[in-house]
Image (tube, rainbow, N blue to C red; front, top):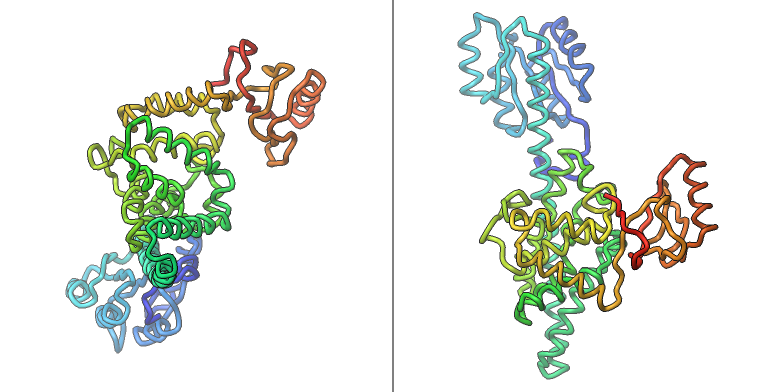
Amino acid sequence: MNDQTVSAIDYQHSPSMLLVDDESSVLSALRRLFRKLDCEVIIANSGQEGLEKLEENTVDLIISDARMPNMTGPEFLAIVAEKYPETERILLTGYADMQATIDAVNLGRISHYVDKPWDDEKLIELVERSLSLMDLKKHNTYLQDLIKQQNEQLKQVNESLEEKVKERTSQLEHSHENLQKMYRYTIDLFSSLLDTKGMSQHDQKTDIIQLVKFIGEKLNIEKKEQSVLYYATKLRYIGLLSLSDDLLTIPIDQLTNAQRQQYEQYPLVGSTLLMGIPPLKKAAAIIAQHKEYLNGKGFPNKDFGNQLSLVSQVLIVANEYIELVNGRMRSESLSSNEALGYIESRSGEYYDADVVEALKVTLADNIEAGQSNEIRVWSKQLVSGMVLSRDLVNTSDMLLLAKGAVLDDDLIQKLMNLEEKNAEELNFYVLEPDNVIEEKCS
């Protein structure tokens, strides 16, 4: 209990509270009242016993009576404030205990006091708010500790890499070209960490790297800045290493408020991890901004307008497009046309208009060059000769047909029968044919 550091295990534990009162009937009433809360309840019949319980248990919230023999509530809470300052402290007091309340405020530094007899609903509401506040505090402490640990690990990796770089440059007569190769190896090393966590298996990394390259060229971004943008693109998800595996499988629009608070810190965590490597400082600054918007409604820092560099805007737009197509942003993947339409509808408000136009031209050029342009259709819109542009899976993620399969009338009928049998609608992504289908799914 003396150690205030919040580990990952501590953070996942259910909250706990300590009830201190010399009257057993009061303790029983409070225990019954808090039974419906997801919280461990510990009781003590005196201030001294309360201190002993604190030595043995981790406690988030304390509710203490004001008048108790041998050690009063304010005296007990004054000791708690010194030894366990992170706890929330509430005093139960009678109408005649004004001096005890003043002492508790001054000495015990209580956050609230409640008059006896208490109102059950108001007391429950107060306790829930206090526990919620403690949970946020623990979460912030946990994130700070995690970043500190990761920075230390990164420092050690960086020291090792610097030594290897020195040896390598000595062997190759300080060749600048080989230095660049070494740092590129470092980028690939970090990128491989993402692969081991499964973060990039649906990322189409080659696609987004080509996408930012083409957009950058159309915007006449200098070659040196293009190199920085390449690093930032490959490492933009490095901060996700701090999140649980379960959180990474949930589309962003389905995250709870608590999950979203954790998720929205990942660009900052990633930027912090890379800031200690000199060649990656500029890339780290771009990574910190790759989920921000022109109107300030992004995260993690609510940067807006001119605070966002042009290269950051390129990654913002390209990343949004890829996440829309791959189903990371929303529960349902969008076709390339739908994703472009979504981004165009927010041009100038969320995204830089010049970058959006460059994305549009880039995608159009790719189509003219023979690269795929897909649409999303339902089974009733399928036509013989269509080619799947993505794997076809059912609602249980079971593979039905692989990307590149050519559909014929017999296969289309079997797929429609499968939908009817299983009472589900399948999403078909196909290469857009010439003059075969005009109605696209909205």
